[in-house]
Amino acid sequence: MSVPHGSESRKPADPGPGLESGHEPGSDLRPPVGRVHISARHRHIDVTTLGTLALQLPHLLTSLTVVLAASYVADALFGPPWWIPVGCWAASGALAFHRPCERLLARWLYGLRHPTPEEARKLTSVWRKVTARAGVDPNTYQLWVEDSDEVNAMAAAGHIVGVTSHSLRSLTPARLAGVLAHELGHHVGGHAWASLITFWYTLPAKLTWRLLRWLAARVDRLPVGTAAVVIGVLGATVFAVATATYGLVLLPLATPYLVAAVSRRSELRADEHAAGLGFAPQLMAVLREDLAHEEASRVGAAAMGVRFEEEGVVARLLASHPDVHTRLHRLQAHVDTAR
Image 1: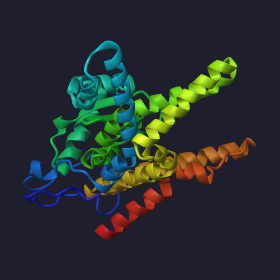
Image 2: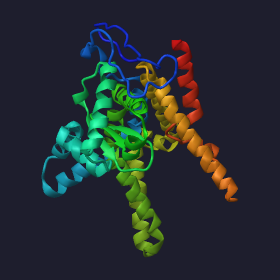
Image 3: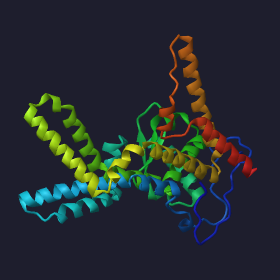
Image 4: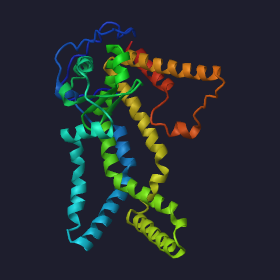
């Protein structure tokens, strides 16, 4: 993904030694040469973000229907006007981008923690150099750490950037910069906030669906008369919701493959963003190491006589990330074009 341009221009970033040739520059991550116009390198909404929002529209409408129905019931039973809970729910999404709320999300939803002083020094140093390349204010985002033995990172909510503890221990500053540039691409393209918003506003629909499945699984344990009443109520509810949403409530049954395809595309867009900042070789090095680790696991399993299960077609279609070979191919094409 190319970095967004504003009304102002800036000179291209100095790639630093080794970036153009494909060799790692170690810890020498130079900031760009010339003036940096922060306002010209801010966030936008790319096509994958729009695709995510569009595909979640049936879920959003279903959630709105559920909230409206619950609000009308509460209005009839307890007296508060139905529009108060509906309005509170509609406005609640803004809380997810409030810094204190984001800190709660980081801790309790994503399982992140604050970095130790040693981790903070390495992480902050590399992060500032990456954001200098992009012309982004580094203080816009909060840096977090996930205790994990995998090389991974995440971009979440509006301002969260998380890195695994193993990534901080094992990656060189240059490779860590490639990973962070990828995560910055998710924020710049709007992928992170779109995922959080759709998760929050589709939660009523998902909880209702789980409740219906829970009830359906226990219908056979109920007396015949009670089971008939439950089935009748559930059937009427599904019919009412389907009618209220003009049948759109049924579309989510056919959208998981499209949602996964859009997610894979957003990962490629984030790779393009990292490559546009000059971090393609570093990101490719991380991906090659991941590929080598996977191949070693495959060889080890074969040596022990354990069958290594290959992903089926359905699993590949539902994968949220593209395969490593595809990512490497596209990053290599970007490097070749830059040359």
